[in-house]
Length: 356
Image (cartoon, rainbow, N blue to C red; front, side):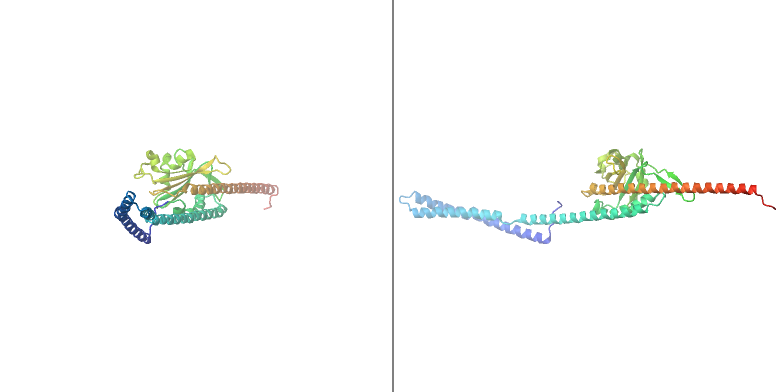
């Protein structure tokens, strides 16, 4: 639970209760130290005198014993009442309970916002997969950017990223998502070779930086980049750079080319396969304070959405390739018919020369 939040009224109650407790303790100590011992001593002396006298008065003895019992009981009762009296702890406990309720309500609102954001991302996903039309190089990033946009808008609530400097990076095995460029005049396609990171086949397919950073800052890290480490394990993780201090430096003093202090990585699984992966999704930030407790869970939701987007994107591209092949065949057939028609026309013209 977070720190207890006290209001001005709580402070007044605490001061009043402290004053009351102090006065109660003072009177209790006064009675306990002076009045009650003296009174009990007198009663005890009277009781002893009567018991050992030559002609004891049993009525006086009974009354004295009763007074001793009553005074002892009153002293114990007064002590119990004083100890059980409402004190400063009750106000603090009430404030702590109120703070806990406030925190639970805030967490419920955050969870609701997470749900609404993920739902918006899925709605955006349904729209963008229908817009796959291209063969231009940046289409994948542009469409996926719309899917990630709802999360970026409230990334402080979804992932707990409050620092202005953060990145969202997606690395995909280059063999899993080939990129093509098409010449619409000739309907010819050409595969584009994208740069990979380190010694892996991972290519940077999506990169968003809040400020000052570029994709080049990520690619130049090579094998030291968190994506390479995550790709080797395929295990979700969230850590500060001190975990790999030999690679990144310390939390307070990162190395010159390190643009993050905290890292979250989750694998991007293939559809219909729990042990195969398309790539890895990476979030980095320069912030000092911890991220949200459920940051990995929420990022895994985003990873699952990315998995479905890649699958839908690939299917759309396969459909486009089939259309392209069909267009090529139609174009070839048309050209062949034109050549055959030209040849036939030439033969006919040769057999029937026109008179000059």
